[in-house]
Image (cartoon, rainbow, N blue to C red; front, side, top):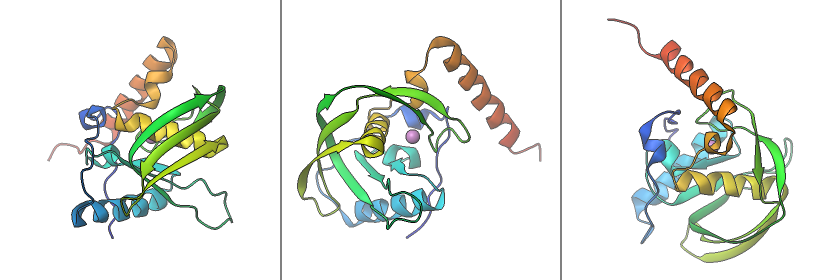
Length: 173
Ligand code: NI
């Protein structure tokens, strides 16, 4: 297992949609393990393969509260079947370090996906898990948190991320 580098906005690779997974090769199983380790190390409650520069339709989430046992869930080739209601909550994203933004999402989702062993499952989720699933599902389409913001907030966050990128860029020599 290894912690992989998380890409930060505006890295163009974050806009590349994930490809369908035909079979979970040893390399892709390794990717899933690494993604979980990377998410826990960050720490974060969700991570999409596109965020580590691996354009596959895979994401992991763990929405367990602090002090609760871990609840790692792996979604391969996920499909959101139905959505219900609407809820606005503050979200973060490992590709937008330190940013917290209000985003509107469906309150409940029904999702179909394969697990890390390729078995199909269906899940009805609400609360934090439903929000995390929609956020990570977005990543697999190349859609980012910033796309859900109004024009002013969008511009503000864009500039903030550019400034942050400059501050962290390697200096001359
Ligand atoms: Ni994210």
